Length: 320
Image (cartoon, rainbow, N blue to C red; front, side):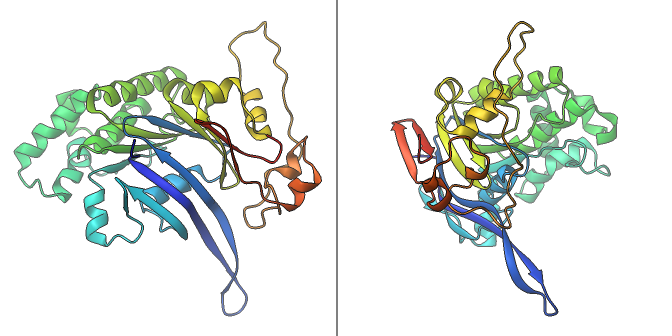
């Protein structure tokens, strides 16, 4: 099956300048050699600690950040060297729901303008047709006609995120990147928004890249899950396999830290020593070796390659 989106050796490095002439002296390796694919109609979860490069990866896929290297293929066509006009057309198919519903909506614009702006930008100049489409979108995400004339400060966090979802769906996209779309919401509101996203996926045939650090939400919504550490994907598997048979030591530690809603259970925690290394100076060899309980000499010197555990399970580890 041809993937809807395929990423090959994708990198995003931010230059660090210094000295009298502000020459580049180093670079922050936010995303460093990432490979994965997303099939049509599936949800790929992306998890990892804060600062590991998840959001940068999501923004780079949409060309909101220009990649440093590698390739992004949408419908088998490379989009990495797209012109401004081609990127503008891509926006119809590739959309994003931002993390913070309080800062991603313009406080000076009402809901009709916020949700209708993508339609105006892409040529729907008739105000009556735009308003009809906005009304249908608001109904789709559980809001009402009278909400169109209200401003963002008049809504709760969950309602604001629903407005963000409506805006993302305005142009009938094929792929939606959910960048921590529920992390700023209360738990009960999180459940509502996640259920809404699943209902919309079934109804509209959407494909999701679901970025989150909440492992329980990712397990609930994802078909496959990728684990990211220091700008690299270290394990990728279907959700059930990854949560029950994790092979990478980082994935095992991450899952052991997830809270279990059972007061009688006493799970064994894997405590990782030290902190996440700086992306300015990642360690040689395996990037996880300074914190790994199983690290051998080879881990300090040689960068591991991808090992195929099964057809749907791959891991980047010498010892897996």
